[in-house]
Image 1 (cartoon, rainbow, N blue to C red):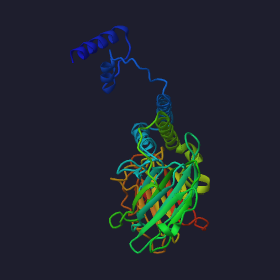
Image 2: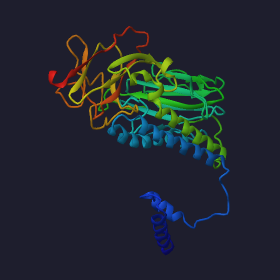
Image 3: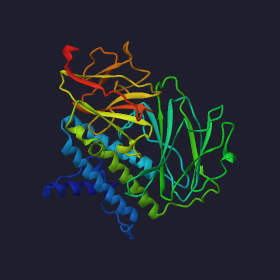
Image 4: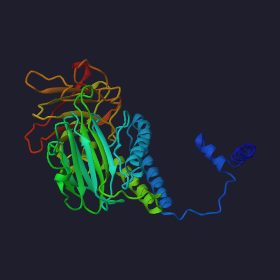
Length: 407
């Protein structure tokens, strides 16, 4: 304690004398406590250490990106928090995964909604390795939709979709139970089946790396969410401490996830950064099957509104078992959906007599039943998800900028 106090005094005195800027808060504590500490071993040559250095450099560059690309002070302020949330989710889905002992991790939280995800959904991710076979068991629940996207690709290699199945294809028994096998060779599916039929099967390649589960929710107050579990099929691998290569690969995977999540606005319809107050129709084929649902038709747009303006959006919804409309920030982060109306599903909107739906996007509540709150963002993205509507002739939304006083 006395040693640290003396060190603190020396640091402050020397810093003041030579004029350099001292760290503050936790940084100052870390600086003081590290003085005088030494260790005879040198671990700097570890692959995991180099991977951590690379991640820190990536984080610093992305931090600067926020400062450079934010168009308002509010975007920069919220961008700082967004960076932490992206880092947390990236570590959750990559660094914390264990393909030998896999488990489904919930990617989103009540407040963390990043990566252009659907706030009216739950997302689960699990890390797998193509050297193993896997068995997934679960219950269907009552949600309108559940889909499994299996990806391939490791390290900084772009991920690709190598398999997909949704709830309409699952063999489910009367209690909603199902079994899904992910193997390199087809097993005896009847041996793993139930009264609903044989087990479902997806063939996976040697570089299989992950599973992303989407659960769309139309009404959180009444629906029962699915349950899921996963394990290696057959003999369980023995427990061994993680190797340097494994932790390095986990950090590289974290860097990849962080890079993709933090640059969505640069490669997902970047023209919407300039062409505002309009929508573009797209699908997973153009967005990328690893980050979007193969069952959805998307209509993605952007808005730019002054404080006294509102965006009126009118749509004619298709006959879909699920759809919703969501607002996002410049960084493709859903704003405070827990406390503000920033997303509405097909069961939450008020319909007109002809079946159409009118939304009002505005900074203030205009007294409209389908108001979506910009949460103070002058610019943002907007997304319609039409489930099972790919190939359908759905009219594009009608968009008009009006004065709030004219509503």
